[in-house]
Length: 330
View 1 (tube, rainbow, N blue to C red):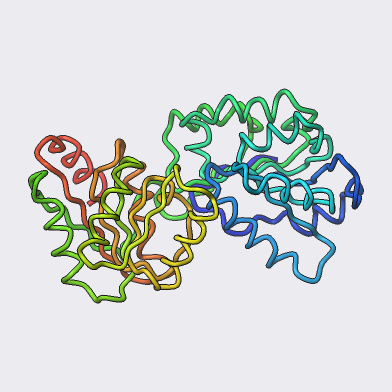
View 2: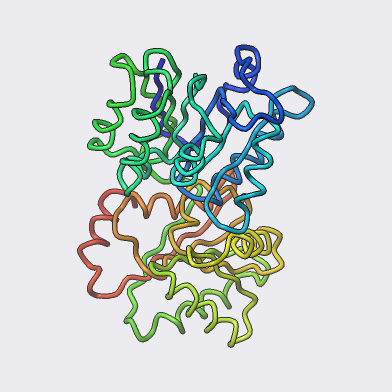
């Protein structure tokens, strides 16, 4: 059975089945055989899914485990694996490493879930996904449930996804795939490059001081530099990007989520899937490279029925890109 869902992964119906049908989990054994595998592109999203799985497994025999990259937590992750695992949440690269070292076998995996599936199949992860699915002992697609989730699913990625799905797969769309929420007011403001920082500060000053504001930039260096610039000017701000250690990324994200630092400067690592319900404003300080990424950035505000405001600050060189956004989304 195969599903493609044009929505965000929240709760997959795999928990009870994973325990009811699985007899391969044993505490203390070196190699574990999860019944369900959930793959996601980022450490933050994997951690979020793991925390949700623990809520649903509360007071049940179901066990979850988490695998993501970073040297500082590798041994801790392996030790937790050996306690037994029914549902494994992982980033592809770390999972392959652990499989090659003999800690994980996919022989009994009957549920395969790809969250943010369009990115998983299009942005450098496809060879890793194929290695996990095709070159392991995972049951073939006719003998497992495969589910893919994303807010955007371009036609070319749908074609690619068919390699992992049954021919009679179900495509389920919640709302219009690739669209934005009606709860979000979108504003495009043309500014010159040398005016962007001052205009950003004007936007921050115009809002409520405690309102959660997420500012997207394109590069890791850009995130660090902009956060440092705002901090020097007295703003309570943190940044997350791929060069930070995982401990610091989680700490900064929680500092933002709790409102201790109401401004977060982030790269695309924060654009997909992260559930921070009370984000009031999202500001595209740098425009993303494609429209789908624009949709995911917008989706960080206006969540769970809340209203939000989205600002894009293009410069003259982005004119064509903005016209495309205007025609499709606004």
